[in-house]
Image (cartoon, rainbow, N blue to C red):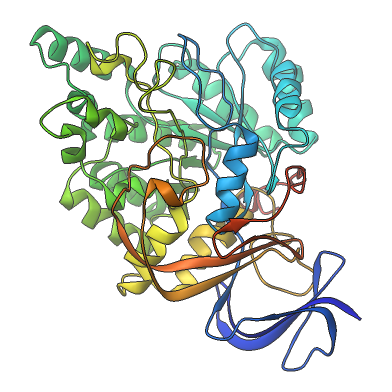
Length: 469
């Protein structure tokens, strides 16, 4: 007998949609048919969509910050919030601090996550110190052990890699068949702009956006693509914010380069105007992230890219800091200059509802495209497919039941994170996750997280399909 039967749902994958029953046993989908027979647990999904559990491929949880800053969400609260948002897998980052062994960073991150996760996880790596030992020994060994993706930064004092280092890392990624995620913003240009603004007395949070115009993102995106072309390696440009960097990615795709791209909710739901707060006051710090939200033309461009295939994945870039906290956005110095405001906003729980409402409900993208961007493509890009990312026989029974007509006003009161605000307060959405099922077990239902810390498993990953894996 089946463990669980989901009946009367409309099943949606990246390829099609159908009306059928889903049979689950031992955490896997073992049947999809008109009549799958009896089961110990019956779930009536009349009027609901059955979608693959969301895969958020870009989240920051319990990441060391320095400077007295502490991230709002650890693994327990962050994965709890992910489950409430319809996600069944998240991919946070094990950060190598400069001078630290990469292996040591990974082991410390596993220790922080142990027994705390409501959803499945797998770690990207962040490379900040590509020493000969890291490139020659540690990183190749970790890739072989299933850590098949890592991130590099082209900005931030304590993480930036120079061009020579980027090329070396890209070359290793080609040899080892690892996916490189690139934060593309020009370090020196940002420093120049920040200094000019501060000298002019323009220090409110809004000027964070002024210090990082699209030109610095466009230039760095072009440079990253050029390095990838030189080394013949696929890369993913993350959190793309507007038309100018998009055009660089479109050029690369048009010329046959293996370049992938990600965008995020803040670039379709926020603008730089939000950083002005009430009257150029500190409220704007709630929206400080990098790259910053742009303008309405940039939102229009992002929608074009979500439709036409410029973007392969849609992630949250969840990077939460409490607003009213001296260890968060209100850290010492933040009120004197935007330069000290921690960069990042929460969004792991609101990613799927915002894209569904603004995309599917408003007719901008299809249901199938929604599934591709939020589950199937992330699974393929980061070595989790076909176990994750689709509703298919043999796959993990990771399923989100979705009410496409439910109207909700997003508020902090609804959130399950440990941040003290949501940047999407008052945002009205149509479409909402009502049940999240992880490997056959309901972990969230009608507003309540009913799973337990430790339900989530750690996933070793294979090679990205970008390499033909």
